Length: 299
Image (cartoon, rainbow, N blue to C red; front, side, top):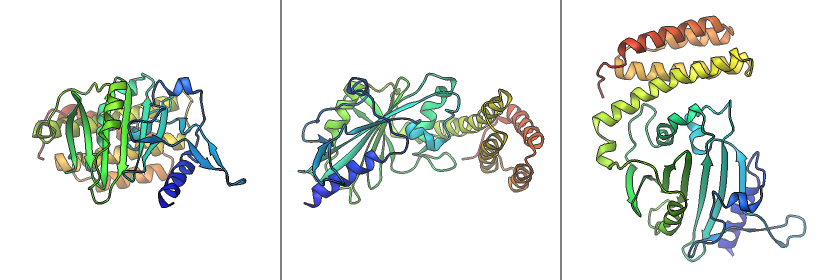
């Protein structure tokens, strides 16, 4: 009974996803596996809250959302990314898992996809977390993160795939049948890399500098939307100052330039809605970056 209750909660949570809209199954099947996978059953039923009877549901959601890279401040203001989600459950193994496939639009934002997919597995200053590793499954290189369960992520062209399950004790059998099935459907396009490569000084340095690059790029993207009259000043200034603050954090850590005064100045500009001041600071940081980008950093 408890396991069925868990399934019910998972199904209800799926239906309550903000902004979800259902499409035809033939569209969904391009991205999701809409049948069971081995002993993992796709969740396709719930209890009607009025009649209290079991009823069939599509068991998937589709919504305009950039998926796992949203937390990396992926820029999707000027295009539409579509995310497809479903869940599977094995009663025998007492395990449930979620699958998310995001089809990115092919915009210039996609050049940062690999970087952004990794961001959630790194510290706030760009260092790979200890549970973050690279693994080869069925000949495909993927990213894995083991903490209270496993998260599997990879790119397949401009699609981002994530499979995730919870296991606080890390004792359950990994659902590799599901991972392998999705790799067969969406083969990884990640280049071969080992966990040792991931933690090399060269890799850390490249990722850190790319993040500093990307933060300045994000500011330019937001100001372009303002110039095109497609975004409000307040949003543009807030997003730009956010990215500039992160740039300053990285500059302080890796180039030993104190950030506090600069961040206070930016906060004052933001509070006063002083776009001119914010843009002037952005130009100053971009000019500094041109001169200093190629310099060595201390990790």
